[in-house]
Length: 355
Image (cartoon, rainbow, N blue to C red; front, side, top):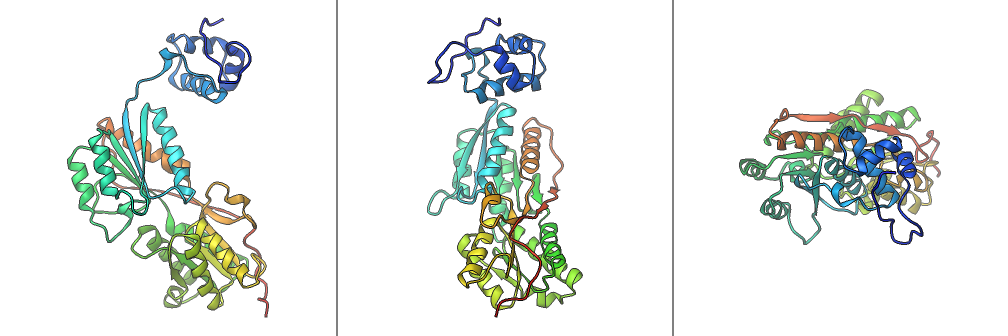
């Protein structure tokens, strides 16, 4: 059957894989598997990809004839890998790029390492066909946007995720940060919390600014808090566990029983701050994160958070970039995706604070 020899992974103890195994994994017929492995026509591209993916999942090496030549290199520039939301984005972006035949080149900015501009220069020198920017300088309102204008003039298509800048002529993909903050505030208000604070990153970042706007709007419309007073319940800090811990301490000093955070890592810091005072989450203080990073459901307590639609955003970004690469310009605008409130164990009904 089939006539193709597919090597077993190291440690396997018998011959070639059975077509039935691959067919079951790919949810196709054995005849279809045979056609794909023998390089015969008549199989739809999505089906062919499923069979190849089944080979990969089962740990078998693809036959040489099926090893596709790369359509080109695509750079992915991200800030760091320590925040789990960035690897989550990177994984989906790389999967979608690979599905289109492109080879991703991951570039990570680390303290003391290459700057975004230096990474971009290296990518351009390597002849990349496009670049995806995730939470880069485009999200910093104090950064010079002319770097992207220059990149565009060099004929390198690019797309930007998280952080809109009207001075940059390119497709943008973002979550609705204002809506995310409103969801979190509304959730806490429904639980009876009247004193709610926000721990967020520096004002110069577009996502932080938008979350702050959504927060003050929600406090005003949902709880009737004057906008100036709502502004006083915002603590701008670092995007880190330590930043969240420091901000939460200050917010608790202001009597907050509910704390909304700009990231899941900041929320973990907020929980640490609550516990350092001998208090309980959510018994004394409820905490809401943002991102729904991988594994965040397994924290103690499991974190209530506002989920970024990572898969949808990453897929849209790559698809827009592919269109640009293929000479089909995408509308120069911001594509905004709706987040989702995920309720877990870090929020509960408001109770009287302990003395």
